[in-house]
Structures are given as structure tokens and as C-alpha cells.
Image 1 (tube, helix red, strand yellow):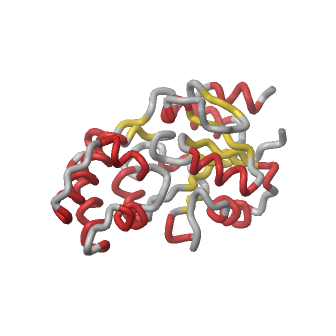
Image 2 (spheres, rainbow, N blue to C red):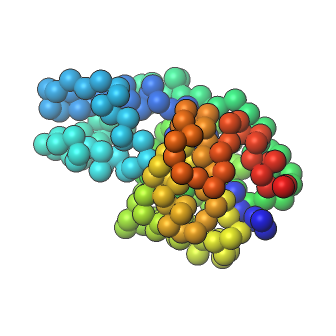
Amino acid sequence: MTIKHVIFDIDGTLTDTEYAILTALKEAVEDQTGKKYSYEDLRFSFGIPGEETIKILKCPDVKKALRLWELNVIKYRDKITLFDGIEELLKNLKLLGYKLGVVTSKNRFEMETQFAPYSIKDYFDISVCAQDTKLHKPDKEPLIFYLNKAGIKNTEAIYIGDTIYDMNCARGAKVYGALAVWGSKTKNIPADFYLDRPADLLNILYK
């Protein structure tokens, strides 16, 4: 492989946001609809835009529910952590000369409140958020947008994510897809590579 850009999803890949996001969503939806949901009921929300999640949950005022969810996440921001080994991996990738990027279904506000506060923000050269494309993961458009912005071929990028949405997006864009098993907690998702821990990526790049 001749990889120039290493592209990451955020939730479940770079950051462990599960508790914060699901708790915030649960509270927002219950406030808007009166319905009670379990965390398992809401796990589908990872990997798709927040607005789409709110629509699926049939909140009467999508914008109000989405804003409440975003504000609720801020309450639980102290529960969001980087996965072990992520910062070390990013540092090593930069030292080795790779360009780093993010392709996420988050909007810019969500990215600023949930991702930007961490010391890893400056490692990334390009970020693609929900506002940048009409279609979203699992569609290929977000990664195609990234490739065009970076001016690289599909064979010069690898995308690391933790959901089937991420891997389908990579497959559609004909980009190598690596499953972050530390976030997915399963290998039952088709992918080109499986990473048990962040450092495993270096072994794949230098095979």
C-alpha cells in the first residue's frame, strides 16, 4: 500500500463518547416525546448524523430536540475520554510523515464541543463534517469529498472507524477500511483490516 492520508472517524474510534452521547440523547428524547429508551435502543445513532437520529426517534420538533441533545452532551463532556494509545498513534503517524484527517457524521458544533477540547485536534490536516456533504455515511460521499479536497487517489487513503456505516463508506469510496475493534467490540463487520488496538495500524502500514 502507498498510503498518504490516514483518516479517522471520531466516536468509538478516537474518543470513547458512548456514555455521554447516549445519556444526553436519552434525556433529550424523553424530554421531547415522554418515551423511555434504553441505551441499547439508541446505539443505532452512532455513525449517522444527529438530525437523522432525531427524525428516526420521531421527535415533534427536530431542531429543538437536536439542540437539547447537543447541550446535554456538554453536561457530560467530562465523561468523554480518548481511547488508550490514540495520542501515541497520532504522534507516531505524524513523525512518519502521514497526513491525518477526520470524516465524521458530527456537525461542526458537535465536533467543537466533543472533540476539539482534546490535545489531538492539531494533529489533523483535514476534517469533513455533516455540513460538508449532502449524503452521509454509509454513503461514499463524505470520503469522496475528502479525497477531492486532499487531491489524492482512493488507494492513497485508509479509513479507520468502528461501525458498519464507516466500513460501507470506505468500501463505496474504494478506500481501505480498518475496523477499530476497541470501539466496535466485535469483528463481525466486513473490513479490509481489523485493529485490536491503535498501534496495530502501524503494522498494517508497514507490511
